[in-house]
Amino acid sequence: MNDVELIAVTKRYGGGAVAVDGIDLVIPPASYTCLLGPSGCGKTSTLRMIAGHEEVSEGDILLAGRNVTALPPAKRGTAMMFQSYALFPHLSARDNVAFGLRMRGVAKVERLARADKFLELVHLSHLAERLPAQLSGGQQQRVALARALITEPRVLLLDEPLSALDPFLRAKMREELKRLQRELGISFIHVTHSQEEAMALADLTVVMDHGRIAQAGPPREVFEKPASSFVARFIGGHNVLARAQGSFAVRTDRMRLAAAGNGPQHAGQVSALEYLGAAVRVVVAAADGTEAEALLADADFHAAPVALGQGATLVWDLADEHALAA
Amino acid sequence: MRAWFLAAPLALVLAAFLLVPLAMLVAVSFYDYDSFRLIPDFVTTNYVEVFGSMVTWRTYGKTFFFAGITWAITLLVGFWVAYYLAFVVEGTGKRTVLFLLCTIPFWTSNLIRMIAWVPFLGRNGLANRALQGAGITDQPLEFLLFSEFAVVLAFVHLYTLFMVVPIFNTMMRVDRRLIEAAVDAGAGFWRVLWFVILPLCKPGIAIGSIFVIVLVMGDFVTVRLMSGGQSASVGLMISNQISLLQYPAAAANAVVLLIVVLMMVAAILRIVDIRKEL
Image (cartoon, rainbow over all chains, first blue to last red; front, top):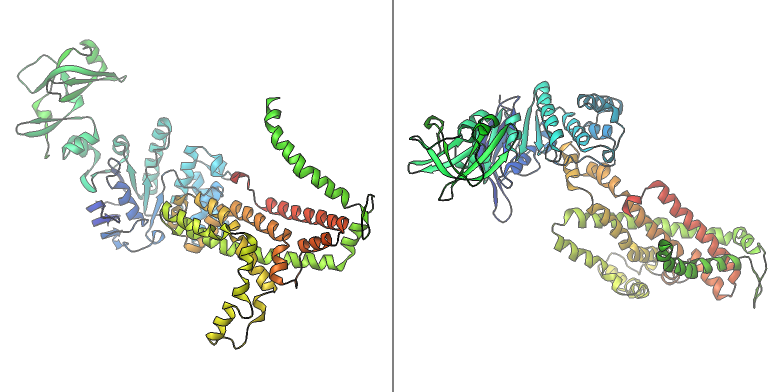
């Protein structure tokens, strides 16, 4: 049975603005799903509707086959981890974690013991007595995670959980989230605007745009076969180019600098050059202004370097083109 | 040096208008007196009389009673008004308008607001006529005016806003996501209130309580006017002694009252840490 099923779910705000426009989505059991998209695409509204913090205007939400559309958050079997964590500032880490059990009437001794177990799960046992203000951002996040997990939800909902962390911590927490999801064997639904995060974590990537699902699939499928020019651009690493027969996408790492030949090519001037360490990013602007970029392995670039403003031609194999619907 | 210089004006004002009068008050409380004059001296008879007289104890009892009841009612009313303004009303504009509405009574003086109750609560006042007209009572209710009921009513009317403002202030600072997080964890309305909003509003409640308690403890006009002279308070007692030119007795009473009020404030600050509000 699927963990979550959205059936024609629509969210309309007062004044007629449509945040989510009749989306259908099936989330298989024990999977990691990332809702990905630019701000205002409806990903957070979707998450909040699954959590029950936002009313559904139309459509149904099924959790483990049960229609939960009209149920309050705590009766759904979900738990939410909030952006910027929303820890109770007047409660210690342990009491924050135990809060859900306290609301469910679990006796004090038992709920504190279980809170300690969950603090251990996120490696924070030694800071159980601290108030949130005395914890670092990363530690607060672990407390928030433990607090969400203690009610043993079937689905954990995470609203931009990594956005407040510095890049180093972000990579570490990413591993930790994936580890927890695997160990607990529950579903995580994670809202993010970072395609990198989605690719690193997700079993199922759902790219959203203007309240609709632009593409849903495993990250590899989304990256290798973007369904539209929006997806190709948003997921990154693609050039979206047009030809009389229609537009197509080519991965930037499939482009090469070479002399003009018979195959497909993009000629112009180097308009930007970025050294990224293991790779070099070369942007070539054609005479009509269209840009394409190549991500070249550093060794390849340094074997035949180009300079800013210099004429250059990017070539690729016809087989690397991926036709786009729009 | 510069810091001292910057602090000097306020220090001088406080010294001239607070410390010196206070020192004089303490000094006078040890003076002797007869019907016509103050006699500079150092006697403790004024304090002996304050503590030895049953009237003092009864008056303090009455004043505590007024302070306690007024505090409880203003807290109850003030909390819910603040809650409504902070959590129920949506939109800053509407909130500001409603908040200003709460302050309208303050556009007139305390005295006028109290006197305004007289035609309403009197024997032939609006309230009694309405009650009789509706057949709820067949004769005027006497307790409505010039009674302890009237005193408490006036206090509540005068001071509820002092409770609303600080509580509203702390409520506006409560992160709305905390409420969502509590709901997510399974808390209903009352438990969100008890476990999240109330603890986070403690500083505002403490500040409002200090306002109300200090104001009621020192009041003498409201009690005199609204009780029609039938009830007493410490402030009224001091005021009466002054009108009888018993300045040293009044001073001793005032010193005791000051200490009592400071102890009450200290007790409140002991229970609630309001530092993060300041």
